[in-house]
Length: 316
Image (cartoon, rainbow, N blue to C red; front, side, top):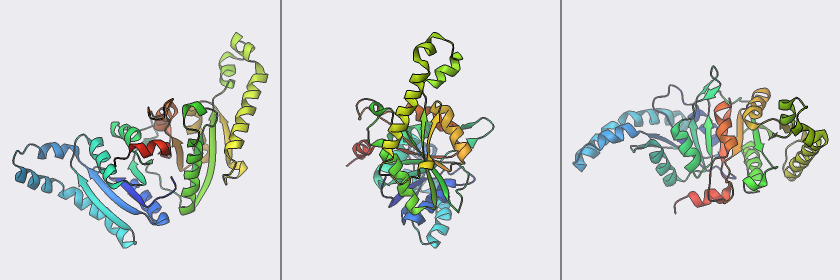
């Protein structure tokens, strides 16, 4: 992610507030990007399809989208007044994710932005069925945003990397994640951090109280050696990146627990994660860490696919 000329924003017509629009506009101002605000309505698409006469169907569809166009133009007005280039469009297509993915392929944005909603009482975000389809099938980087505003004085951005598992992903993905963070910092006032969540043999020691046969075989020397090896892998990864050493963190624990804790303690506004491919690059899946972590993070999340993979996902 080294350019941000076009941003597509998915607007929820039923939402009371639109954090996705506010944050996308802040990015657009910093990078001089063009915005496209989109509403996709799958339910009204089904209503319009009930008409067999094409002319009647088109007329009915034009009436169905009028409220959506009104909302989009209301959102776009202040942005245009601030000097931003803003397009709007309403898509009537079912299922919802198919309509959105079709529009994304048409616009070919450098970034897609969508709202999610974090519920602190149950410690979960509402990652919807549509979100998961976008996570898997959207070729562009996907920014899922919560309602909490970005501080005007500077956005706290963290890049989640894992240099210890090169077989699970293209070796360049960690560099792409850090590079995306550094690029965003050129258009936003931002503080950058790198975090490596390292689930090692310490967890076995904790679970067995240091007294089981497993821990006896592993031994404390092997645990320390694993930490040393991971610290060295992280040091090598950071060569050539302009992140201060004190802002590079190696934290213990499984990502599903340690990353949400890190985000809370550091008051991170945005966490950048990689969606990985296991084995063959083209047999793409969202990494298990991302699947289990996403619904526990209080901050916004930017999901990047490997650039080689993204390039194959765009239609000509």
